[in-house]
Image (cartoon, rainbow over all chains, first blue to last red; front, top):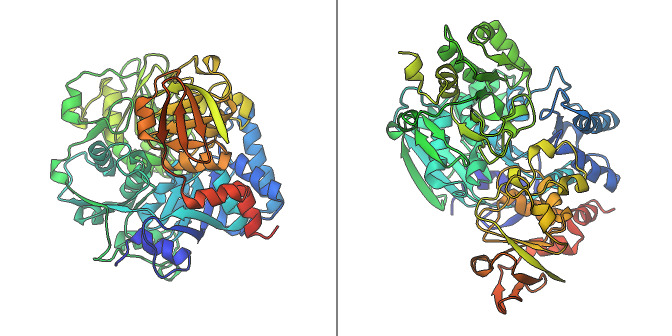
Length: 424
Length: 164
C-alpha cells in the first residue's frame, strides 16, 4: 500500500519503512518550539529532569504572545524563558525588537524546510505544513519531553485529501478557501486527521496563502495540514538562503489511502466570513453583506493573516479611504521584517491616513490578550483564526473572521462589507 | 480507582478559550487558573461545584488552543473526571500528561442529566449513574496511553528513555 506525505515523513522520522494510520510511533524531532504562554511549563519539565536540551540548535523560544510585556505576570513568564535561554545558551531566541509571531517568523527566517518533523507548544504549529513539513501543535509537557529527549510520540493519522481546482474569484484568497472548507466539514470534520491540500488551484496558490490555509487545519480538528513542496516552495526557500540539497521533498503515492477525498471547485467560492461563535459558521460575502452587521473594531494581523501580502491587500482597499466614525482599525504586522517592508513600501502612510493604528508584532488581540480587546456587546471582524466565545475579549462580544480585504472594507463602511462596496 | 461526584453538563465544542480564557494565561499557577475555570460559559461554575464532581459534555471537548492550562484549570477546580462523546486531540494528550482522567462514552453523555450522582471506575472504564441506577461503558484507553500512565506519565517515560 502506498503512503501519504504525512506517513512518509513519520516513517522516516521513526526509522521505519512503512507506517499505517493508527500506529503509535516514537519519532525524532527536527524543531521544537514554545512561546511565552507555553514555554514556562516546558522549561520546568526539563529542569525537573535535570538534563540538558537534546540539541540547542533544534529548539526555539519565541516570546510573541504578550510581548512587549503586557503586565507583570507576562514579564515574569518572559523572564523564565530568557533566563533559560541564557543558561542553556540557546541560539534561537528573539528579544522584543527582533521577535515576531512564531508561525510567521519561523518560515520567514528559513527555519522550516520540507520533510521536517516540527512540534510546537501552540495549536497553530500546523501552519508549517504549508512548506511540505509535518508540523503539529501540542501542550507544554509534550514540548518539555521533546526539548529533553529530541523525540515525540505520535499516532499516525488518517489523511483527508482536499482537491482544489478552478480559478479563484476576485477577492478570494487562501483564507477564503480554508474558511469555506471548514464550513463544509465542520470544526471537528478532520478530528485527529491529517488534511492534505492539493489540486491545480493549490499549485497556483502563493506560499503566504498556503501558510494561511495550513494555519487553520486545527480549526477543523486536524492534527496537521500539509501541502507538497513544489517550485513555489523552492523559490520561497531559495530567497531565504535554504539550499535544495538541504531538504527532502515527499510526495503522496498514487496508491496512498485516504479516509476521504473532497473535491472543491474554486469557481463556487466567493469571499467568506465566519460568524460567531465558531469558524464553521461560514457565509458568502454577498449573503452576509445584506445583513447590515455594524462593527466596532477590525483587526488585521495574527499568524493567519499578518504577512506582507495581507498588508498589501488591506492597503489596496484603505488607500484614499477613511475608517468609519467610532470604528477602530488595528493593524499588526506579524514580524519585524514585515513591519520594515510595509514601512518601506509606504503602506504605513496609507494605514495612518485611513485612521488605523499600527502595533509592533504580537499575538495580542487575536486571543484576547491585549492591544485591542472587545467590550460587552461589541462586534469585531478579524483576520485571525478563531471566533469562540470571549476569544477577543468580553464573553458577550461577537467576532467575525475574514480575509484582510473584507476586514479593511468593513472598517471603512463600518459594517461587514465586500471590497467591491469600497472600490466601486 | 473510583471517582464519584455530581454531573455538570455541557454541549458540543467546549473550547479551551471558555475552559480558561487567554486573559488569565499570564501565569501557570494552578490555583489562579482554577478560579476562572469555565467562567465564560458558566460564570458560577467554580462556585457551584464540589470536589470530585464530573464534567459531562458532547463532541470535540477541549477544541482550540494547545494550552495545558485548560486541563490544569479543570483539575485544580476540583473536577475529578471529564466524560465526553469525544475530545479534541491536543486536549486529549494534555489531559493524560496532566493526570486529568478523561473518558469517551456517547451513551453516558446522552443519558446522564445535570446533577446526577456519577461513579467512574477508571480501571474498568465503567460509568455508573447512582441516581438512576444505570451503567454505561466507555471506550477503552489506548494501550500506549495505558503504558504511558504505568511508567509515571510523560515524565517517567522521559526518565526511562534517557536512562536516568
